[in-house]
Length: 72
Image (tube, rainbow, N blue to C red; front, side, top):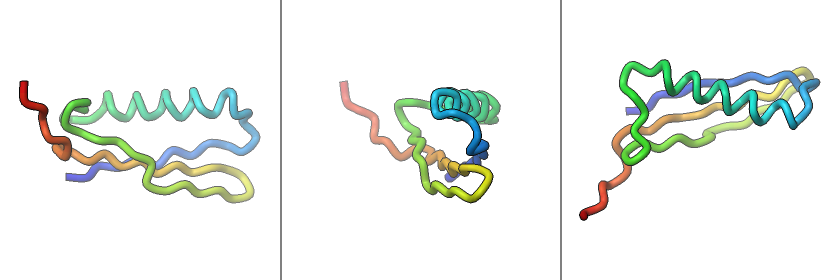
């Protein structure tokens, strides 16, 4: 199952604020999911990056149950 989000950040924002801002929005999105993010089984990746005159857009995709559990 795929879940996704798009985060839009103004180009006027300095990179020192942009990175923590995007990180905070990703964390808020993950915490709002009905099914919690499982670091051992799920994968989050940047699927697409766009920029235009005014802003940057980061498209993230969450893939569920794709990692194979390690045997102990």
